[in-house]
Length: 207
Image 1 (cartoon, helix red, strand yellow):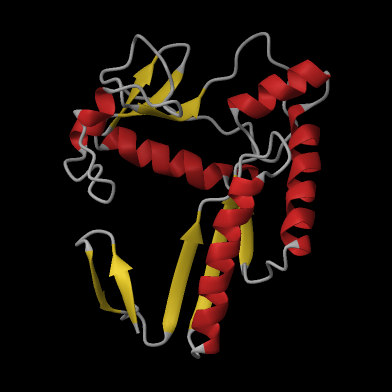
Image 2: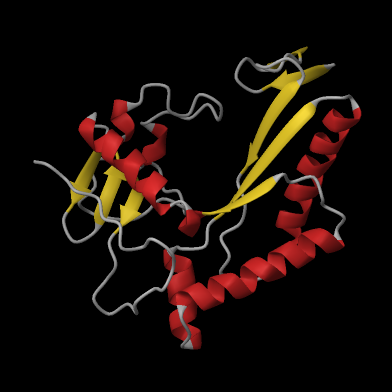
């Protein structure tokens, strides 16, 4: 079986790192609203991929994350005057139902971000220790794109091309590079307390 390798821009024989074992990761939704046709298209495609690999006797572990804490969730919850965690739960459950109605059953495990806060904190700490991440006071911790020379290999983008405006990149005049993105955002004084597991974890920064 051959698949297209985006890194080298050509088809090559499919050889998983482990004998007949395949690990798939697909970025899931940010649950601040209902799913749309773009979600359906993406997850139907990967559902087909996972099911076909299993049909070919591969042992597939398919992980999909769920972003259930995000500025969009907080803003939408503020508009509806409800707790952000309650809003995220509502749309997360709706997402599961939508996927079920589409016959998408191949996902091995869903990983909501709020259930992995300690792991996220640990990752941010390691990036800070390696000077790959940096602090912006009263804002959060950001990833410094210039410290990662291979950035953009798959999409043929570079740290320089990241300087153009990208809608999903966090805006901050204090960032070192325009394309730098947030790893951990601090809560704002006016925001409500968010009752989600392990959200009391903090990232310590040594200067």
